[in-house]
Amino acid sequence: MRKMALLLVVMAALVLTVIYYPRYVEKPVKDGDGPLAVYISPRYTAPEFHSPLEWYQRYHKDALNRGDLIQSDCLYCHEPEKSCNNCHAYVGAAAIQP
Ligand code: HEC
Ligand code: HEC
Image (cartoon, protein in one colour):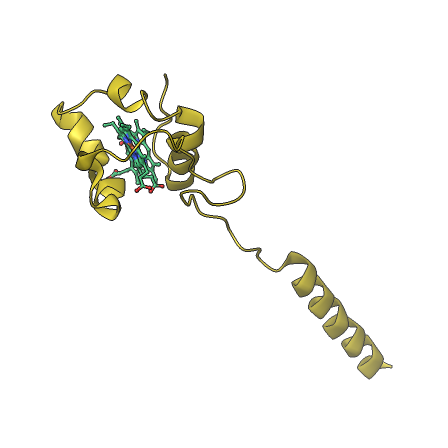
């Protein structure tokens, strides 16, 4: 009887693990799929100051804080909802208000 109960507990634990197993979390990837995908209209070419892109993903904040460029310059090509705030929500940075 006790063995049976134990078996049931183990089975329940297994089933719950399968149901609640952490899902794959999407990342904000350029031209990726899903709601976090970063999209910039293909009619714009990447400006030189973005290069290398990995560096810019990390340090664009400093360029803005230094005043090299202002936010409205960015929004000429970037739509905040599609290529700023989806990534900002993911990393926990403040949302860009147009
Ligand atoms: C002339 C158009 C243009 C302007 C102006 C512009 N961007 Fe971009 N940006 C792009 C393009 C195009 C890409 C994609 C580049 C690529 O795929 O190599 C991009 C990519 C990025 C990325 C990386 C996105 C990712 O998922 O890797 C960040 C961050 C970014 N831009 C921030 C900014 C900021 C901040 C400004 C203002 C200071 C700005 N951009 C101004 C066109 C622009
Ligand atoms: C690929 C991801 C990504 C994209 C796309 C992106 N950012 Fe950021 N942004 C970040 C990260 C990460 C930080 C925090 C950097 C840090 O604190 O060192 C940040 C911080 C900032 C900050 C400083 C705000 C704060 O809370 O510290 C500004 C301003 C900013 N981004 C502007 C923009 C603009 C404008 C765009 C769209 C043109 C944009 N970002 C697109 C990743 C991104």
